Image (cartoon, rainbow, N blue to C red):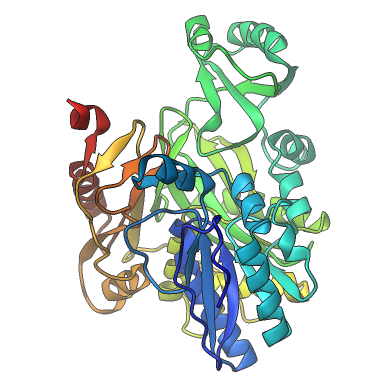
Length: 468
């Protein structure tokens, strides 16, 4: 149906006449959320809905039809070498190339003409996703301009310093001033200094300095605005997911414990949190207050907040994620299995927040401690270029995995998601795959995750070994 252009690496889009479609733009790791969006739109409009996923992921196979892959770097590498490469794109770069794709723009125009309205679901709202401002297109998420403002870490700290327990910080203009700030910081803060640029996520553009040598190893650094804060030794890294309906109405989904490697690199999460009940209540209320401030600025939709908790139980705010978080799919599956059957999903809550400036009145939050549903995730990201030896196929749908453990009596199970496939070069910083383990017994999760990590590790070999 749509034109074959050089910017599209792969497409199997085939549309049915009796179906309305929405578009998803983002990485494949959150593509599963579209199941909930599809069901919500079908229920509201009493029509058959399906979706087209526009992703940057280069893989051997995809979990469903109607996939469109855009990744200029992977395309350029293939043109040069005739080999398949898996490499990540920054969200901003991806949003930009999607918005300038002739194939995407033609598809958008045709769907708007056919349906009268085209919904666009995103992992992260970005100003670069300009096609969402075309007539007839409705973004199912916060405004890209508002989200971009809130994803600036300096803006967050300035706006929230009187609302949540923000760690002491200093702003440094450029690398030279940063060096002096860190030298003074190491004298004032004996546990170390956390360094970040205003825009950072999952460990990128941030690092920890505990000795002068730690800083020297980081040079050369880009000329930028930096901010430094006191590094707080801590036991827990809780994260909270919520939905902003308006400046008064904020839904809190649940708290999970993040797995952080190297002090600042996110690798996965575990639910339920092991934090004491009192600390969990306090963190939820901090997050609700943050959501209300987001709401006053015009933000509508899903967001997350990260915290740290030290050995004394003191809670410190780390950051707002003005977007969906990496474990949003697991949170959706958790609520689906723990709340009453007719409770609205997170995707339904976001739909009402964005389109009607409110949350549905029948929303239900988790109130009691959870004892018979646990899960853990692990994102396997390669730090060196590797080659995949074989494919680890998806055994079953993640949503069905949660249902089986919760309702069908299965004690525990692990699946590997989004494995890139065989014979593919995987560039550093790229996900090889994700491990998700679900169990009735939390103690089993570590074993299941280690098994999944081992399977992923065994599926690759280093490029140096290939050339020997």
